[in-house]
Length: 460
Image (cartoon, rainbow, N blue to C red):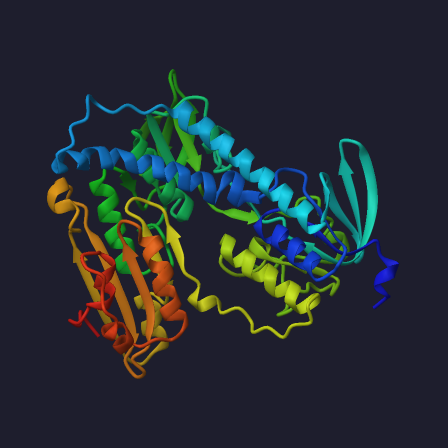
């Protein structure tokens, strides 16, 4: 490889999302000369149209239940609660602007050069940057692709009337009737959010049950709880066409039903955001699942061009992109021998209502991997709801490899599931046994203590 001095930068990152910014900052901390190019917004999907605004909206939607629950604890509100969409939307916009500023200050503080421009690969070490003030070319010893994913909407008659998840946060008016197409994280979360905010909400999914790949018991339990909260779930059907109506849209389903709604959200997946990156011209093609192939060093077929985050195989999660960014920098700039990421014990949460938290193997995956397993589960009405009057229930579940007693999976559906599973994930990642869980003293009275008091075997 040519000497670093031949290039203007040691590292050029394309995409200032979570993974790109982390890679740029960490590389700069090693003394590397680093630049980053972004043509849209700092912070990427997570900050602007993903995790952050979604969680803020989820918080907002929970207040609906909280107001109802308060009466059982003696609180009398002065009148029926009302929701102002514009207040939530505009406060969210202000918060994201604040976060954009933080990302910019972090880059500046790290000494990273920021190009507000669209980048395109020219060769293995050269990128053209096109912005409002014209275009330039820059060179770098290594280039990191960190452009993330972009929503995908299927083509069907009237699909142009459907919004994607990037557009749903900033509606001019709140939809009284809301429809979501899809069965993944985003679809399930937004159906819960708009239901909680007061919309008549429908979820349409072509499969038998949403959240494919999650633990089956978790999926079934979540389905029942969401229906209990009023979400209208339509499985084994799809949208045939959408037609504008006098005051909204008529959505024709393949099962013959017609739903009249104000907004249709197509939460039908995301694809690698590689438009006009110049990959094909350099011979960098996507694999069969639409990802950029990389080796354990995050190198593409061109060793000087690296990729991470949602562009490559693995969970499409912000913390995964952050972890990959740090490992990439360790390998290429810090000369650190780091262990490969353990993708099998990455925890995640789905912020539907109630929340889902999960880490490790589902029961189905564990049965396929181990000769014998033990399953411990509990399904209960949380203490809070003994007075609130709510019939919401909580599910907790541990999956154990019988031969070693190691807990290989933990799952929860209920209030603050993501918060609770984060701690449990440490235990699962560390390979702790069911006996370790049993010997841990619980915190009483909490829902979380159920994870260390599960003694009765549910099934093997």
